[in-house]
Image (cartoon, rainbow, N blue to C red; front, side, top):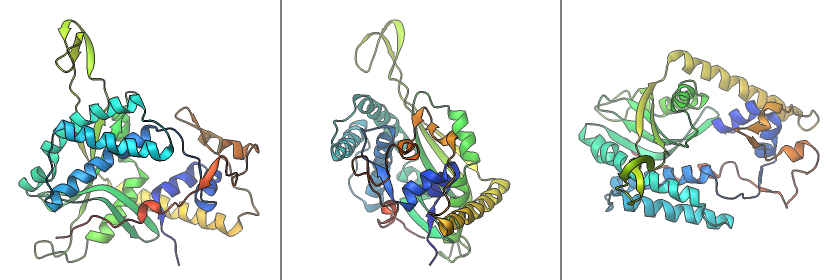
Length: 326
């Protein structure tokens, strides 16, 4: 039986086959590390998913900044406690920033507003599998024209470059794979009388939440947010950009997916008798050292329980999708 592989697995193999072998073949991961930016981002995604599910199920939901802040702080605190660490003060400040921009965003782009415009939000963290691939969508939006958009959420640190992110998403292998999965699920199938041939997929609705500070120096001013002298309040913002998926990128994604899957299969057929190629460029990514570098250097073994733990690569795909058709 063919195993469905995630886009993250394909990109990891493309980045470094040795890293792929450690994570997806040996199914190992580094011991839990202190809370980092991924914990903050996961907290924001969870809050947006929770808000959508509340509205879809008719559960009382107060879209105000204190609710978003308290909900995310509680979730972030739980993730930190699971790792055995205290919450990071910097991330708590960033959660306060996010709570303001996300509250405003949901007022203008949440389920109620989308439905008022004739569209719908079909679900959050939707799991799709087809043709040897699998993926999880942040959110799937049906617009008033009967077209589908993958609503993707991104929190951006101060060093992030928004235009660069937009260009990366335009050429993302992730989005090419998601297009294939979405169309396999929704296009060419009877859904209802209004859409007997399904819904076409258009592209990505990229939602970005910059984590800029709440203050900027301004002589003679007083911050309206906290009362500090010499500062001016700078309210957090968000930006929404629609990125249609170009045909060339879609076709290139299909070719790349097939090619990488073939390479993985070939590697599995000869492993462990032929060593995997190690790509030195992946040892240092965004000024971070690869957590498996000491294994590659021969200082550790991948089965050392003091540094690594068992990992289930499919654990994110085991929950039921929150999905509604028609």
